Structures are given as structure tokens and as C-alpha cells.
Length: 179
Image 1 (cartoon, one colour):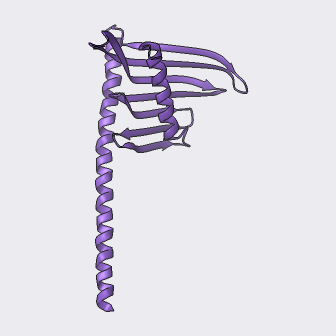
Image 2 (image 1 turned 180 degrees about the vertical axis):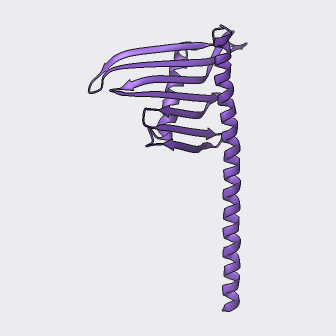
């Protein structure tokens, strides 16, 4: 009986150490992916600023909407799409792919600012800020990686990903005539 308890303690200790090792390894891999996304973000922002300082127009499309929403009053929504263009030999046309989207809008008296960063067409980063809260979400090749919150979450990661997909689909219809 005593030998059996000793073996169980060893098995439990090995299992706990293995779980700790897996957690540390996963966290380390996530940290590396988040660092890569942050670098991509810095490069995107720097590239946009560089073109503006050189007085070169960045590939940018701006969509502005002003409308009245019941219960919220007047809403102003301005979305900036920054994109790359590639020539498609098969269709003999340019294909435009957004890599960075910013959106500024209000709902009643609350102002929102959002950023969406894409890598090779996939959402990798979402940022939303109001006067009292900030939300950051990171995605990697295997899905959701991490959230960083200041204050209450503004919206959840699934809705942020769906919103990014909707904005990207609207861009495709507008710029690539993908009807």
C-alpha cells in the first residue's frame, strides 16, 4: 500500500511537471507570435507615415457615413482602408488587399476608434479604444492567441473577427468588384 502511494505521488509529480512545461512552452510560443504581430503592426504604421511625410499617397480608400440612428442620434463613421495591389496575370487586373483598416465612429456620446491588422489576408490584430476602455486581440495561424484589456471589454474576439471580415468583404466588393 505504501509503495502504491509512493508511485502515485511520483506519477502526480510527473504529470504536474509536464503540465507546467506545456504551459510555459505554449506561453513562450504565443509571446513569439505576439511579438511578430507587434513588429508587423509597427511596420504597417511606419510605412503609412513614411508615405505621408514623403507626400506620396498611400494606397488608401476612405469611406465616410453620416446617418441618424434611432435611440443613438447622429452617427459619423469614417473607415480608412490601407491596401497593397498586385497584378493578376490570369484576369489581367489589379487585386487590392487591405493590410490595415482604421475606423472612427460614435454611438450616441461615446466615441470609438478601431484598428484591424491583416497578414496575408488573415486578421492578426484588433484594437478598440473608447474614453474609458481599451481592447486588444491577437490571432495566430491556429486561431485566437491573446486578449489584453484595460477596463471592460468593448466587444468579444468573435465579434471583432466577424466585424473585420465584414469590413474586408465590403472592401473587396468596392475595390475588387467582387460581387
